[in-house]
Image 1 (cartoon, rainbow, N blue to C red):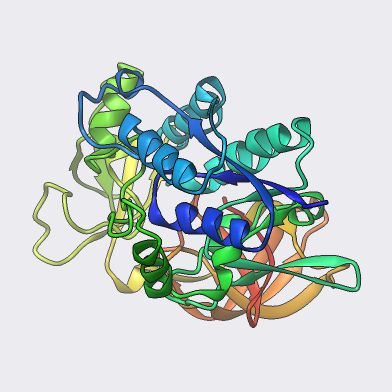
Image 2: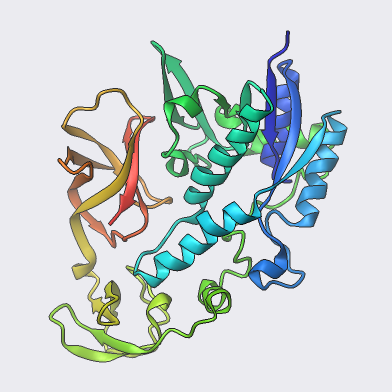
Amino acid sequence: MAKKAIIAMSGGVDSSVAAFLMKEKGFDCIGATMKLYDNEDINVSDEKTCCSADDVEDARSVAAKLSMPFYVFNFKSEFKEKVIDKFVSDYENGATPNPCIECNRYLKFEKFYQRMEELQFDYLVTGHYAKIEEKDGWFYLKKAVDNTKDQSYVLYSLRQSQLSHILFPLGEFSKNEIREIAEKEGFLNARKKDSQDICFVPDGDYVSFIERYSGKKYPEGDFVDINGNVIGRHQGIIRYTNGQRKGLGVAFGRPMYVAGKDIEKNTVTLCTNEELFSKELIADNFNWLVPNPEKVIKCMARVRYNMKEQPATVYQLDDGRVKIVFDELQRAITKGQAAVLYDDDIVVGGGTIV
């Protein structure tokens, strides 16, 4: 009897080809798209957004071409609570969040995964570029073959129980190969552009989004240097993130960068480029993806999506948090971003920088 798989279809080329590949392997498949918000929920008129009505129809079209049943799951309330509200709260509390990680954690691989279980399917399939390999009864999350598209960084929150029932069929392919398959199969989205922005902030202006969504105006405050001296005025604390140089609105006679924020005092600390570099961080909500990690390990670590891993020593602290000490200084380590550990192409674990 064929194994049953539910394909998370976004309307993009990647999840469409994932569905095709699973059908080719003989799986009994259905497709489903998550309904995460209405445009009026995020105060957007008719601009193109990810998970829009057009995306749903693109997914439905591919499912029909593959003779797959297709469904839309309404997860709007969960998305609002777990992703949008947290996004706003993180900025208000001085962090720079990564909402794609939270969407994977709470929507794709929690709510969607639960739906897969309720429907008594064997696997949840997505169009992520990553690999899962089983060895001696343990499921390892690994980088995709295509290093330029690898998405393992945003998947570090997956647990063993999930990894054993998730399939990433694109992990062995390059993006060009995926588009070629889509064109060969006549998918209408074969040349559809990849979404770049946060799905609920389609114009990229997250400050205006937060102000509209929260109904708040964030008060001005002081720019201070690393010694606490007032050197100017900022336009509202949510407008700034670590390492930022442009958009400060003040001329200092030399390049200055955001080094940190103090929510209580409503100050933004600025520094020179040299002063942005540090070696250490603490990460909480840490999820280990390898069995029985040592208290102290040497590995490679990444603190933002588009960076090359850097050698580091990792210490498990008594309170469950993790301390990461890099061999070399790193630029603009940012509160709210993910710190993800690697051993070659295996994801060792990850957590949130505090």
